[in-house]
Amino acid sequence: MRIHNLISLSFLTAVIVTACTGGDQSNGLEALKAQYDFAVPDTASITKVIIRDKKPSSVVLERTANGWVVDGIHPVRKDAIEVLLKTVGEVRLKNFVTESAVPEIEQRMEVYGKWIEVFVGEQRVKSYIVGTETPDMLGTYYKMVGAELPFSVYIQGFNGYL
Figure 1: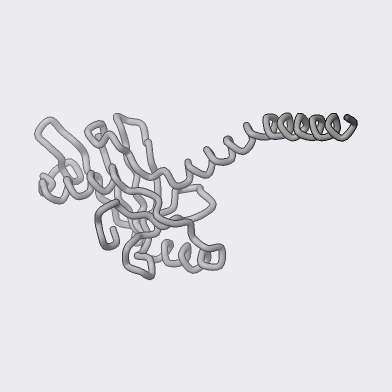
Figure 2: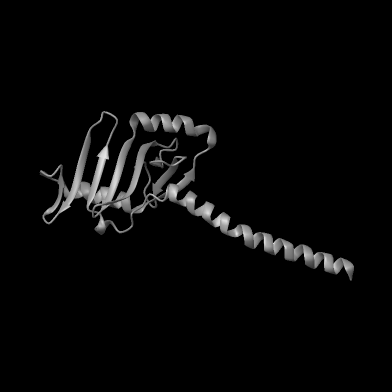
């Protein structure tokens, strides 16, 4: 009888500990997901995209009543904006990057990366760096501005890098 009580007490303790720490785990997972949630699924709500590089040169793509324009002047090619919006809307996590690869990937992102800012109305909803291709040429390295780690991303059903 005493062993049964000990087992029950151990089980109850394990349940309580799990319940108490479960919230911390989900908060940690949510914080991690925020670092690799690059997609803006509702691309129809996107009003502006700013693309910069290290030079520094930049372009501002804005949605107007007459379609998308570059730097407030030139119309954007329809096929080009469709590809950009599809990429912004469908990009997904492919792999986590190994710890040993992070310094090299970040260095390449600093040199070759494109800084992307996506706006809905006047609010910036995403800000990330698009880096170089992965070694298998089937993904691309992305990193949220201010995040700790880069991630390998892809678009499901697309073979190649973004």
